[in-house]
Length: 454
Ligand code: OAD
Image (cartoon, rainbow, N blue to C red; front, side, top):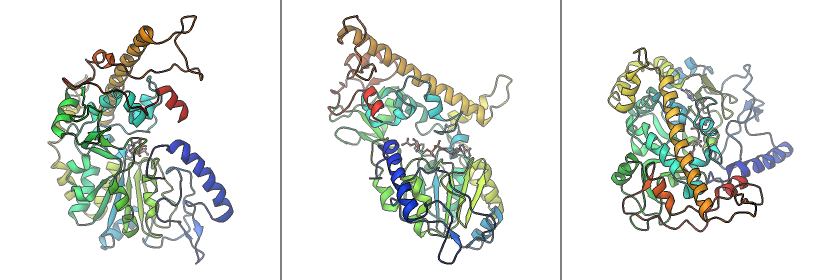
């Protein structure tokens, strides 16, 4: 069941409720510090999938008077001492969008600069719809608009990405679990076999109907030309193998999800730990394995274990401090310098600078990027809406007073996409040259209905 991130909003609420009720009767909630058999508080950890919770749910930080079990202290210094003593040789790293914001890629849930907050004001049924498989089948333009901006190659890895590479180079990285689709870990030089892309990535693409793989060169060309790619075999929609809401996580996630239990250090970076089953990974470590959270905010119950270290703030600053405390700062900076040629477009636009001629700050670059993204998505949505109304006006049944047909719930009913749509949206996103759009999938529901059901 937790193998898809599909119906998370509805099912999780129900399951959380059930878990809470059961938990009250039979056992303490998982994130609480509770007395263990020796009378000492400890986290309750275990295999993924036993519990359902939102990753960022409230939990009580461990009382300062409780001594750590593994570290000498729950501080940066205590952590560095542990690493320098060679006790961390199987490190698992878990990352999210926060590690790429300083590269100019917005995260999802930051209140001002997050993608969802900015998309929420557009004409989408709901912000997450851009990553919803049912919505994509009806209207792929918003996703491909984002894909045009986010496609790998435009951005330079951050120093946090290089820090993960450094852990690998030092032979300490057991596995990196990332939710990011930007491939910046790879670009920083973390090898393929060390990365579990839990939410997929742009690295592969296939037809959503017949599952036939689609060539990388072709999708790159289509995305660059702002065209929507169609399967060479069946003309179905092609999608990068990014995990959308409604889709299964990759096999690699399930094959590796026991690794946190074998680790001797867990580092969580730049994630709100909101999306399951990823959000449960840090709880799959063993009882007193040290965990460190390097993030702007406290999330996911990190901080309530005996050996949890919180380094709250910017993750680039956090990894630099950790590297310095371990005596690795020079190595880290050298590695990051090697990435200087990557993501040239973005680096140049940052250097292009503010009106006063000064270079733009990382925040300004991020804000520009968000403006650009939302404007472009808005444009595709406006065109879709305009076309929808045009089609409705021409072919859809109207009520006696001439009003648009509405569903019983009062929403405008969205017809199946019309053949004309691809040509009307032609200058924004079009199907590939000489490729016919297939009939809409029989299972796809109108957008408004989906929205109401989720
Ligand atoms: P979120 O946007 O939910 O969380 C990003 C976290 O990083 C937040 O806690 C921010 O406070 C923090 N943050 C942002 N910038 C930071 C910085 N420079 N330094 C330190 N912390 C920073 O992103 P994810 O947790 O990655 O799924 O989101 C998880 C999933 O939700 C994504 O993979 C995506 C989304 O829906 C799919 O698209 C399938």
